[in-house]
Image (tube, rainbow over all chains, first blue to last red; front, side, top):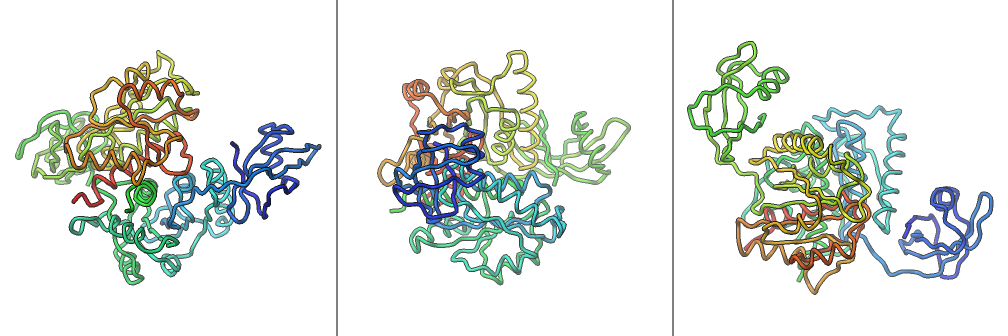
Length: 254
Length: 254
């Protein structure tokens, strides 16, 4: 069933006029008729099934016929923070696939070895485009939340945020004893706080500079490896999210 | 360090002429000079460091100066079998990112709900192009093996292969008790056979038909879910490989 986000509260039995963007997609593009149904997620992340009740020239009415107890969100809010990728294609891949895989927010920042640069005049435009990618991926994957996409001026502004678990993916990291740092961190999250917030920092193509690692360490970040293969800058966050979902949603939590 | 594959056996101290393709990339594109080093992986998957000893007009000599005990392969050989994706871009993404994440082989097959079709005359050409993608991703991620890319006429020909663990990713699958089917299967692999072979089948954009699920079940495939979010056809194999690497390479195996 088609799945959209709407910027208001919905209640059972309520009738409403579709916002222009949803009218355009559901009625014009997908040609939904009176009686057809789709899902709307409201500001409280509740998924409602609505039925189209009336279609006029430029508007349409829908009615909330059911509210679902449906949650597709990871139990931990994960922020993916990336040094600026080499090009927009890679940035978009991170946001699109990362949204499908469950990230709650994305932060991009200029980093020492980054080849990519965001012209200051273009930041707002780039974020708007990425936010649209996040919205359509969240619709497609039937999320309860649209992830946010932000830009920060530097790594210090990224590291300052309020998180329960701070990780930086770094090639040089190996295993510490039986478990990897990542497995240890995720296991701790599972057994502690279910509303935890996690941030993971990823370098751009050129990697992370030693001074950046030092800054992150000083902010309480733990260095974690992502296995023995060298992953491209845009692949590492996707590997990370697959691993997190597996540990937090699929593996035994006893 | 640059990393290439070579179709012969290498021994310490051996001198050899670079194959034309490697000459082209290492000497012409990357402008390696006499004395420069890079890695060559031989037919036994051994990684050697070679030094350029001589450069002529259209050839170059290198000498094996060190052989490394370096293994970047997953402990389980994973075959990713996908119903034909909608377009070449998605197919290439699966092969490229799947190679970085450690898959041993890829199989593409026409499936009931697939939108994509491979014209018979074009199969060889498509496979050649995908094999090149696999090779360059295997070089980039410093693999010991270049994954194979194959095409099979139908799902039965995929299901017939010789594997220790057979899974099909299917949206309808939920959890069975404490652990998911995927977590249970991976845990069993960890505790049993270290040279195991696993195959995972993924549907195309349209999903897997009930008759196809029945065929796979009859061949001993277990249905597994990949978490509560709906993943695009090209995203599911990447999620799967991230989860496998996490369980097999990073999490505690006691």
